[in-house]
Amino acid sequence: MGSAAEQGGSASDILKAMASRITIEPGKRSGQPCIRGLRITVWDVLNWLAAGMTEQQILDDYPELEFEDFRAVYEFAAKMGRRVAL
Image 1 (cartoon, rainbow, N blue to C red):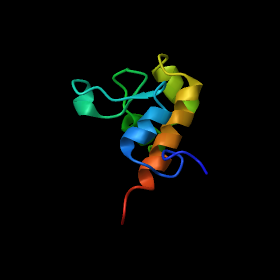
Image 2 (cartoon, rainbow, N blue to C red):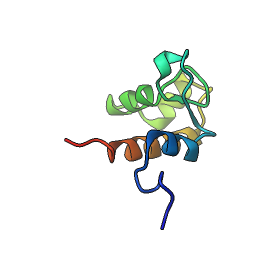
Image 3 (cartoon, one colour):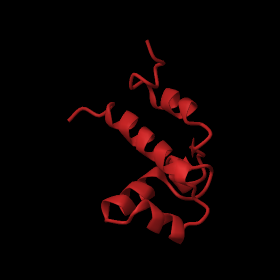
Image 4 (tube, rainbow, N blue to C red):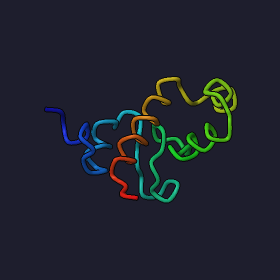
């Protein structure tokens, strides 16, 4: 059996599993999940992708991001999405 984060556990469990890439700091971006302590949120990246930007275009515009950050964004969104009842 997988960890709580792998099974759609609490937000804190999910963050612990992705702590090296996704961070939350109360005074930064209103406590939203950010990429590696940068002022770029998970939601920023998802919105850019939804608007039609490619990963490479985002990296060109924001060179502080790394390819590995996208996997963390997708994983975070997938795990958070499992926690939402529609």
